[in-house]
Image 1 (spheres, helix red, strand yellow):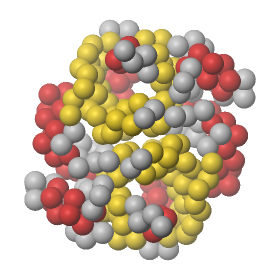
Image 2 (cartoon, rainbow over the protein chains, first blue to last red):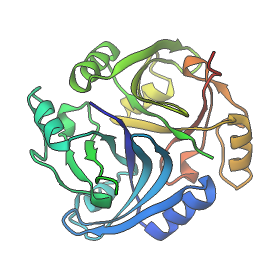
Image 3 (tube, helix red, strand yellow):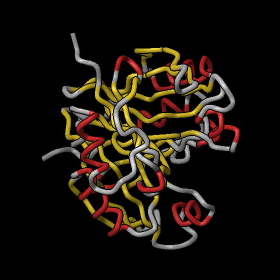
Image 4 (tube, rainbow over the protein chains, first blue to last red):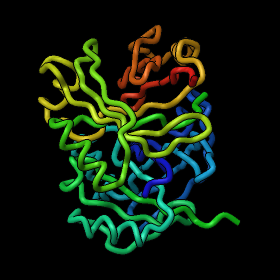
Length: 141
Length: 141
C-alpha cells in the first residue's frame, strides 16, 4: 500500500528561518516552495532522499492565517511534527480502501497537495493520535 | 548527510494492538521486535519501504517503565509522533559535525539502537521542537 515515507510535516512560525536552518544544519535542498490557500499555508519541501518510488522530504509549514489548521496547531502550543505522509500509487483508491476498513477519512476524495500531488488525510482519532496523510505524487515527465 | 528517513517513532500504550493495527490497516510488515532496557522501551519496526540506502519504517514504542522518556511522554499527554530519525552513513561523524554547528547533541557518541544500529539524538530545544535522531544501520551481511 505504501511506497515510501513521502514527508514529515513540521509546523514552523518562520519559514525563511527554518529553510535556512535545514539547509545549513543538514545540507537538505529545497525542491519546492509554494502557497496553498485552501489549507492556509506556505510550505517548503526539503529533499532528504530521492528514491526509485519518489522522494522523501521534510515539509516545513507556515500558517498564512490564524484560523488554518497549522495556525491553530501552533496557537494551541503544538510544536514540531504535525503529520506523517506516506506515498501511494493511487490516492483515491487508497482512501477508499482505508475508509472501507472503518477508519474515518477526512478527505473521501483527494485534494491538491504540494508539487502537483493528490493527497488525503485520515482522522487522527482513528489512527492512534497520529495525523496521517497519503500522497500520490504527480506523474514524472 | 542524510540518506533516508529511517523511521518515524510513535509512542503507543499497547504494542500488540498497534502492531496489529498497522499490519491490518496499511499492510506494513514487522521486521524487528525487541526490548531496549537502557531506553526503557519495547519497540517494533514496521517496514514501509526498503530502498537502496536502507529501510524506512514506522517505529512503535511502548514504555517498559513509567520514568523512561516514552513513559513520561505518554504520562504528560503526548500522543503519536515522538521523534523523527534520519539515516546516515556514519553516526559518530554526523553527531560531531552537527555538534560543531552549535546544535546540542544528547548523545555525543552513538549508542545502541534497534536492529544493531548506532544512534544519537539531537536536543529538541535546538531543532525547532522536533526530537531528531540519526541512525547508522548495522552493516548488511
